[in-house]
Structure formats: C-alpha cells, structure tokens
Image 1 (cartoon, rainbow, N blue to C red):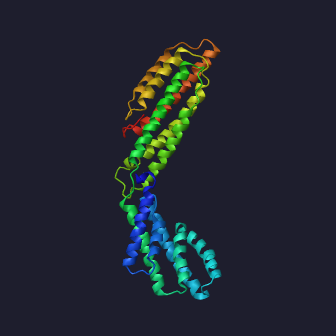
Image 2: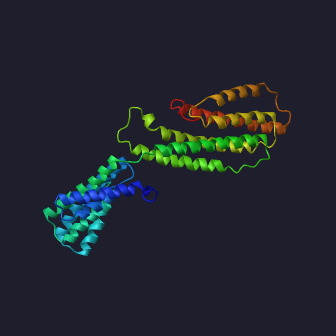
Image 3: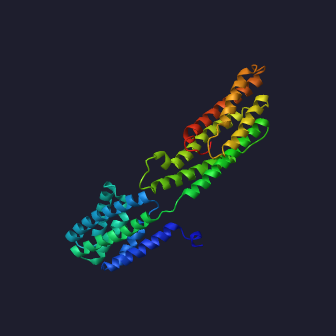
Length: 328
C-alpha cells in the first residue's frame, strides 16, 4: 500500500539517512545529523550513476574542504570570505569534472564556517561524515535497485499492440481509399518506444557487471531502437497510402499482406510469414500486365513503393530480432 504514495527511491533515502546518522553517532561524530544529510544527497536512480556521483561528491568535498580551510585560515570567518569561497571553489570544482559535488562540498564547508575555527579534528570529522553519509547511500544503492523487467515487458506488449493496430489501419485504407485514419496509434507507439528506451537505459546502468554476451545485456535497447527506426518506415508508408486514391486488385492483395503482418508483429519471435508472402506477391506483380491508364499507373506505382518500404521494415526486424527471438 505504501508504494502507491512513496517511491522506492524515497524509502531507500530514508534508510540510508537513518543508517548514516546511527553509524556517525557510534563513531563519535559530534554532528551525526550531517551524515544523514549527506546520505540524502548521495542516493541516486541507478547503481552506475550512484558510484559516479558519489565519487564526484566525495572528491569535490575534499577540494572544497581544502580551499575553505585555506581561505578561512588566512582571511578569517567572515561572510565575504564565504562568498569568495563560492566564487573561487565552484568554478574549480566544475573544471575538475566534479560538478555533482558542489552541494555536498558546500555542506561540509558551511560546517567549518559554522564551527568558526579550522582544526585538524574538525576537518577529519567532516571527512568522516562524508565517508559515512555517502558510503551509506552507496551501500543502499548497491544492495537494492528495483528491476525494470516487468515494466519493459509490459511496454513491449503495448508497442506491439500499437504496431498491430497500425497495420490493420493500413490494410483498411488500402481496401477503402475514402477511409480517413487519424494516425493516433503511431503517436502512441512512438511515445511508448521513448519510454522503453528510457527504462532500458536505466536498467543497463544498474548492471555493474556485464555478461559475456553484450547483445543479451542490451536486448531491450536494441528492441526499442528498432521500433523507433521502423516507425520512420511506417511514416513513409503513410505518405504512399495517401497516393492510393483508387481501389485496384493490387491494393486488396497488399491489404492481405498487412493483415498477416498485424498478426505476426505480436508473435514472440520472427515468423517470416509476412516476408514469404511479400516475396510471392512481388513475383505475382511482375507477371501482371502493365497499367492501362495513367490513374492505374499512379496507384500501382504507389503500391509498389509501399511493398518496398515494407520490405525495408521487415529487413530491420529480421536483422535485429531473429537471434533474440522477439517480435517482428
């Protein structure tokens, strides 16, 4: 019930913060709450990103501590010195590629400023807070990251459904040139593919150790990028269908081809049925008589280009999916 209102990242942040406060207290830190604050800043969305950002925050904080100690030790504890620190330290931290650590470096620097004295004990205490706070965040991140597999499976199913609807609509347009289709399924499929790419990228960043089969690790990214590429061909198909303003026997034959594809695209593996029908249809077209009128020529030309576009669509699916046994 709680997951409906509170995300897993919030829960992990709470756990990391409490653990950091308790650990800092047990280690004798005079400011254990500071460790809890640093833990909050250290929790991230993926394991790989967590390691990168925690490292950046830690080293940025060390740079900030060094510069703050020098400035406060030489110029005193004044507000203008604090402003000078920001003007000097922030650009240096960014130049060192530690920009994710600007906030954490500011936290430990403000602790030093609040103490009103630069001492070895004070600096070591801030380093301890960094180790405990950021370390707790890293540990929680490494121990558990929610799996995106179920979401990816669901989105793949929804994308396949949209593609199936698209091909059904194309078949209907070929049978009835007066039919007006709004293309809503294309927009939905594109949005779902973008969401799939986002989740697949996040899932990939949670893999600290890659398997020997790189393609297996990246199978979801391959799938959703394939769908994005196929949507470009679908857009081309729509432009060609707009030129089919008259029903011909060839249109009905190609409509049956799209009917088959609307079923194949939902299969869990590449069936090759549509490809076989396409090859047979191309042979049949070659055996037909040439167009008798200009209107027939224009429509048949558009239909011929349509099946060539479909051939490119299937070629992408065959290349990217036949080994992985996913959809057409």
